[in-house]
Image (cartoon, rainbow, N blue to C red; front, side, top):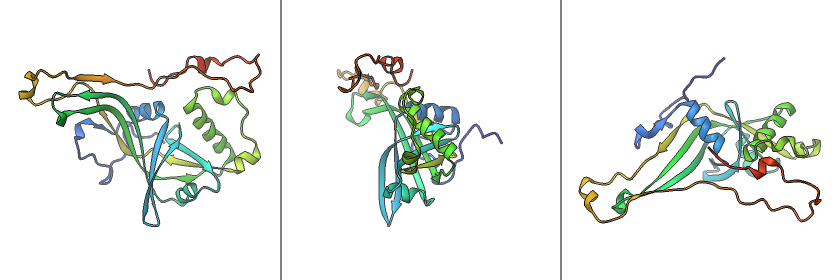
Length: 221
């Protein structure tokens, strides 16, 4: 069955603050998820809230999370508790004439749902491939894949992309009309993730060349 072009919305996921910046469009949400590297996963365990940064990978309409099979975090999530997962890309600092109107340009996603334990070895390997290629596209085919013992020591969870929204701010500062005449610089300071020069492992054999996907590594367009 084909998925709706938009994510579901409920009372918990309805945008209330500046809803005009929001969107439930899957295409936009997927583009943000595919560019980012870290998700913050929020949940409650024994009445204590936790928010944990985690690597993830997207395959279709699921995000995949992984961790040690003895991890308290993973043991909590695999029980099917409610989870709020967020991802943010920071695109720039918005510098206004007044301090009140300073802001940031960003693209963010907030998702709600419950994670499900991945039991199938086939899906588990596909999930780990998605996680690997999210970080470094093409790396899965360059490195040794996990063996049986490593798979057993790793818990993989599937998080459905079903409910939530994206929120985006772009453009220049929005000052009060009276402040536009002030002799104060205003505008945007763009920010982006850039890769440095790869540093080889000292134990690397000298005849091994740097892969092209690291030479040309970048995030986004």
